[in-house]
Every structure is written in C-alpha cells, then in structure tokens.
Image (tube, rainbow, N blue to C red; front, side, top):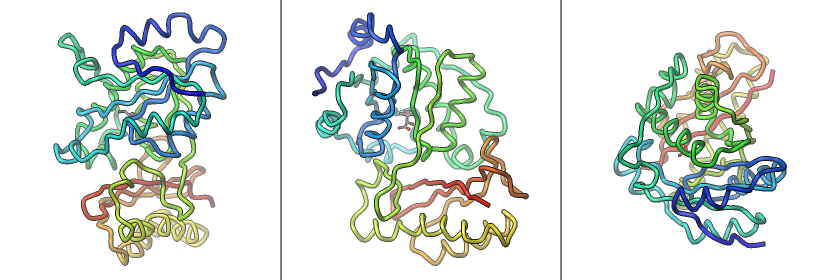
Length: 281
Ligand code: PAF
C-alpha cells in the first residue's frame, strides 16, 4: 500500500484523524525525517499497535544547539515518503515551522531534575527543552494513544517519560530497540553525512561498548568506564562523554545495577554521534 497524502497543516491532519483510531487508538512516530531502517522498524511496531499510524516529519529548529548543525541536518522528504511506502498505509504530517510554532505558541516547562544536567543535557544546553516542547505540541495535534521512540536516544526517552508523567499526559510511551547496521553502527540520520572511511572509524563506538561488556564481571562501573575511555581514545573519534549510568535517573553508577547503560557521544570529524547499550552482568 502507498502513502496517500502528506498533511502539512494542523487543520487538515486533524480533519483526517477525526474518525480515525476508534478501535485501537492512534500510534504516533515523531521523526525529523532523513528516515532509515530504524524509523521503519518504529513504524512497523506502530502498525502492530494500531490501525491508524501517524508519522511526523519535522526538523525542529529549537532543539539544535548550533545553526550549522541545523543547516546540515539532512532533509530528504521525497526519499522518506518512498521508504514509508514499504511500511503499509501511514498518515504523514510534515508541517512548516510556522505551523508548529504559531504566534500564540506557549512553551511548556517541565522540571527535569537530575535528568537535566547529565550527558546530552550537559553538552547540549536547551536541547531537551526544544525536544519536549515540540513533542508536546505534536501530542496536542495528533492526540496519540501510543508514541514510539527509539532507545538510541536513551536520555530523550527518559525526558519524554518524565514530561508525560509530570503533565499527566494520556499517552503510552513505547520504547523500541536500537536498530544497527550489520557492522554494529547504530542507524542514524546523521550517518548519511559520513563517508566510507568515517563509517569505518565510527565502529569504535560499538567496539568500545562491547569492550565494556567484556569487563563487567571483573570491574566496578567506574573502572569499566575509565578503561573503556582509554580504549575508545585509541580510535579516531573525539569523545564528548562516555558514562555508565543508572537506566532510570541516568546518574553515573558506582555499583552494578540491573539495566546499567553505557552511553557515548563523540564526534567523527564534524558529525556528532550518540549510542548506548545495556551492560549485562
Ligand atoms: O528523535 C527525534 O528525531 C527528535 O528528537 C524528535 C523526537 C522527533 C523531536 O523532534
């Protein structure tokens, strides 16, 4: 089946959704486009949950920390729509900035507490405020029963859960496993900006996470983190952070706990990559 129409206004989308989702609600996959197999997996899982699936494609300016990053973010709407054709009927919402942020737009304020100042929160000030505001606005527009998010953005998932909890939003957040290339590199829209040598260099991320996994029986989380940083630095990427954290509050771990996560952010030349993996003891 094919994607039929791309809705670009709130009004047209809401008209389309008026009688939709009666039996099993609406499943929603928010994206910034430049879709890849990881997104398609989210869409497939959404289709398992509900007959009505909405995919939004919107490069949200308020969550970027630099103008350059925003400018360089890949925009590939035509390809995105082609890729979505492989995933049955979905409703695509691709609004312009003015549609998402009208003059009467009101920002929300959520107390992120301990989630705010670690990892992405620390290195990308304002990023999560941008993410929460756009996701909240999208939720208001789509009124989903389910919203699906990839675990690759592990902290984003925690932040969105916190927002849903604090604002008592009536939506079920569904986490989806990270989809990887056969090389082990996590699928990401940013991978499109890597040449073949850089793709190769970026494998240090998955190799480091596997190295960390090989050490958990012998060492404490902090020792594993230190050794893994040394290992990572033998590669060519510039490390921003490598932390082993509690999966719920994302604070650095000093003793092993179930679901411990290693989280990495690093630059491959100009391209910032993030990834994470559960470490199993
Ligand atoms: O994960 C993303 O692609 C974005 O942060 C999201 C959730 C679509 C909000 O712009």
